[in-house]
Image (cartoon, rainbow, N blue to C red):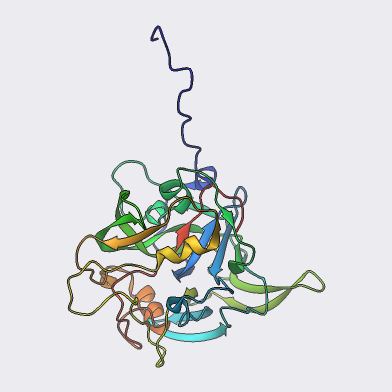
Length: 327
């Protein structure tokens, strides 16, 4: 022990909320899956719980938000043939409901987060940028009321990174000189949903604000098929295709920005704001490495080249809030 220890040693960073609901195993072939793509915040308000907030920013006039059209789509894939079973879309600035819930019938396990130590598979949930731990010194952010709406409550599932960006990214301080290397990022985040393959099902409900009760939107059996729930808050063009980030120009090698800076508009009193910029010219991830059923569901949802072409190699990705208990 040193003779003159520092009287004010730096406090170690607090553990992230993901760590209290750690999963160390990821089943590659679940009965159902939740897929999250676009501008959303994610937090764990308690042990075995997860909340996903659609970035709405109802008072924002930022033009990059104008084309974001939040939606939830339920897709079945049977013998590699996808079919849309349910589609719910709303206006970003005025969602007609505040909370949605995803749960399983005859499901197994509460919500958890796949975390790997050391060299991993690239599926670690923490490939998503954690705004609070990586860009706010581990301090909880004060979220503006209504900045994330609606909130999707998820009662089950093992959350993980479904696909990584092929290129690495760096956080550049806006109006400052600070830079933080972020490495490869989560291009799409997902949760494996496990339930009985014979009598299990996926349920979506919304909360009626007057009665404070849950109203069922639908229930879909997994027997003989896989069910995919796609939570999407991407930018869509007039033809319904996933459009480019405003700063990305096809064929140019300039470092393109993502839309990540919009998350700082959801925070009160943020001391530093960052753009997330690709270290090279961005390209699309290897969708072909995914199981065929997942590829079919993503194509049906318009998130990859296929039924509806995706033109955006720059991720309009989610943000973790690993120090906060709620959005």
